Image 1: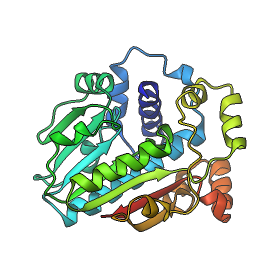
Image 2: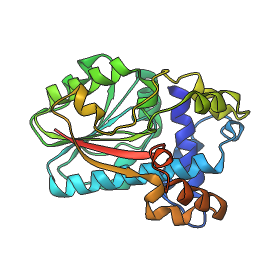
Image 3: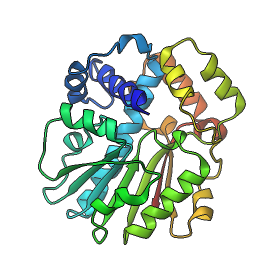
Image 4: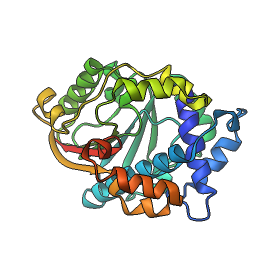
Length: 268
């Protein structure tokens, strides 16, 4: 997942250069400048840049709402990569922010991102529940996962959700989801010429996803769906280029297409 952390970083940086950015994450530009990597060679397409920026903004907004309601909360960014979400969200002063990712990613993160009070890095695999030992369990918590679940198989996702609800007393879990991913979509990604798609396709878990947003409630009875929102219905779609805006709005009218890019939020 290391290369995908660079991919999403560059997508946020490209969005920040737009005349009317969706996310406006200027810090991502500075972080990318500190890495000797051929970002342009990834061949990021406009739709990926826009969708990455939009889903990140939507998750940021959920964190803002939660921390406004719980100013002593804990925020946990699962598979954080090189995301500087704490700088964008600007949570209340008493909020603690934990970024969890593989050791190599955390090492790069700690080298490139500026230090900030009450921001903590947690190196480890999410398939090993020891990462939870570093995070307090008794305070309200919101956990986010941006682009993560496509790289885990079903049993790993079930285990992760059970670890989270078993460790923390109460909170929310919010993540982006792609609905049910069919073989046509997988084949299109594998056959696409851009290097960005090669990086993603090599790391996909093979898990096809789920259609019904209540399916995680079957895995884990503590989880209760509180929000299912399609990116296609977000007002920020108006900031997409014309051709992409029209295509996105049209896809949003078809439930199966609208589910291909959605934000899901659960309480526990």
